[in-house]
Length: 249
Image (tube, rainbow, N blue to C red; front, side, top):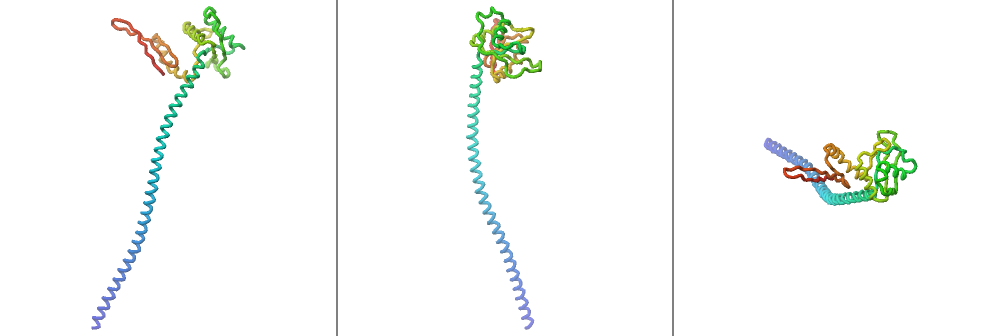
């Protein structure tokens, strides 16, 4: 009987021990699960906060895109207005130079102290007194601003001349074209219309083409503001016609 009681005690002790172990394990798991639950809850709160921030960022990005589109439209409008105004300013500048010419490669100092008187004598010497029924009235004349360049390859500064009457300017340019080669005291000089720097650059783009046309003896004219007109004889089997090709820079 004592043996049965010992066996019963042993079994009870084992069961109690197992139950205690089970409780300890469950308690351990519960504590770990609580921590995991707390961590998951923190992550969920973080995700909610992050989702709200992402939503706010998306709203800001959408708003910025709308503002950027509006700014791009304004920039395009301003670019068009700026281009229009720049063209108007350049046109106004060139209109103010409508009666002007440039004398190129006239030796420095040859004008003395009376530039206007010198220009009148200069034109008479180039073209002759008989070309002018009355002396052209010169409103202003001066060298291009700056000091004389010591480098002889750079040439003397241009002389800018403003006629009182536009027709006098046209006549001088026509006489210059007709004579082709202008000599003053052994130096070849040139007479050109006076344009703004921007327009001169546009017209200068045609220089390579003009050289080729001259080499081929093809008639051309550079029209204001920057249009190259080329006259070409086209021979057909029955007749000869003249085509005019115009190119703009």
